[in-house]
Image (tube, rainbow, N blue to C red; front, side, top):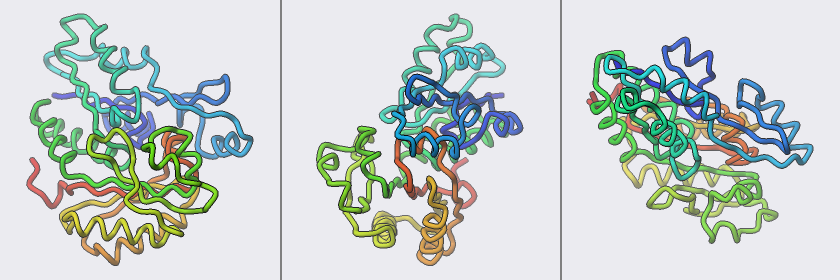
Length: 288
């Protein structure tokens, strides 16, 4: 049976993954001269203290040794499918590929590294779908085909209310780096064509019209009751709940779930960020 492995960008902790039969490793958060295994050694409350203290924060992929330990279990009877967040937003994918090449040939051939092309809620969805398919006896190739279909039809929007933090992270285009964060604007960000950067679909004076812009974009691009919608937030649960209420009204038949962003995602997207994503709901689509 296929073994699913991943990291904490799946929105699961190590213990939660273990309970599901998924082995995962923590992403790395670097604060000043200290590094932490996210969630395992630093949580969002502890991260907030560092942010408020003005500590320089960066993120990194999981430790090579931990990924290697995962991959050592690969075999013909139990091939591994390792899922990472989008390759353009983290070194986790390229690092996992490098670790794969370090493994012995009789192990390497049974390891597949897959990058989700996205972040947050859809990472969570892909891991869940992959695990369900693996439990039902599907092959790595069959699982990847479904994940590719999910990726080709997903929707990804980020509404950062601390845009200065996002700009410092460098994951926006040159045009968005020129926006003045002191204006208290809320950009409506989406992936560019090759998913290498976020670009602005519009700039709104507050969060509510930004959410309305996402809803309009969803409707214009074919999101319907066959989609599952996720909302993720960092230190702004009331904003996420407002977003869910608005999405409930606009898409009453879509299932929805609210997440709290992990420390690594919080550093990348900024405090008071709301991420809204949509993907084809396996329960309503004949995906496998």
